[in-house]
Image (cartoon, rainbow, N blue to C red; front, side, top):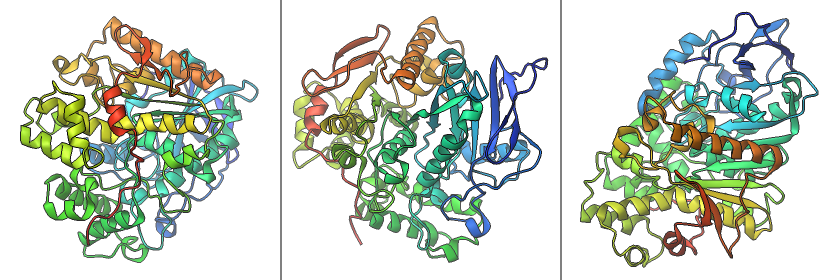
Length: 522
């Protein structure tokens, strides 16, 4: 886990939080504190429980290393990366719930805006210590405080387990935001100017938090980058959790699963995910679209902590008064198509199957062919997957917010990534290095190339300026979205404010409510 170079001659910053004193580092003019616990480790008697307040400590706690990540699925080698990180953290291996803070001006009284990042990872993987999430550049150049944190993922965080509260990963996020509310003044932040921002599953989490009564008042602005449309009914979530437990010969209960090591539990989730990815008809009959897209975990609309879907909640005014910045990339699906080895290889049969499975309504497939008459199999496959999973859920979140009389600003990232010969286009995840300004670090760097171009740097500077302006003043620099002009910011080589570019898709999906995904079979 890379850490920015420290300045050995600079005095090390110290702050005092409610739990105790912390000593961090100073890196390129920014005070950095890593691995600060915001809740007790969710292990032992607290396994599968809601997060509990962290106990205090005596003396000054060193806050120089990222905390150990929560148990991870095996996608992109994250399980191995997590094991390495645990060994390098210098902390207890089960101290999963920690925050990291980058502050250009630590100490009470500065009153800086605060940006709290929620990373993505399909609710299955994700850790705050990845180099692409280093908040130094965003904090230094934007004049904001950046906070990142770990939350439980996979079965630990989102499995529907009997005897445990649902959506534990979301409850962890609320606990982290409560920590920010109670402690960020010590780092120079204003708890009344907090923006929650996230991408992919992190954006889905932001959307969920906007709908959760327990999160009300913890942040005053929200940024949702590529919101996934997948929220589960309790029945679907319980069915998938039962299949994961069955991999271990157990039942999906706290009593059974609390004695299973986190690594084995993650492996069981991976095994079920692999079966979904194999296209087994049995799972598709039972779990529908979740199986067809190999999505074993998502927030559960269980009627309590998460009463209804974000689209319904926002339309009913749940986030009234919370300005929203939301958008997507133009070619969301292309990265996944490439990972599946189908880039440029989609057959007519595969495109038809995708349209039949994911297009909305009884005539959705026909409407795609009518709306995109020149599209071949590759484009139709990409369009319907992009629209179902990310593009239309993101747009509809903005429309739900404006329907309630609140303000939403919409963007689309259309700039094609130059890495890998430009094959990925403006794909899912490209926005992350551009927003953080970490163009040559971490996994997304492959999209931009080893030597970022002046064009990439300029685009990143524009996006960082818009995101930090939104966090500071509530205005990213372009008009709010409305259902008349539908103006959005398109980020390309030459950015422009224009009418929403994906109008054909918008019309196809305009009557779709994005309900929670149901259990479709016994």
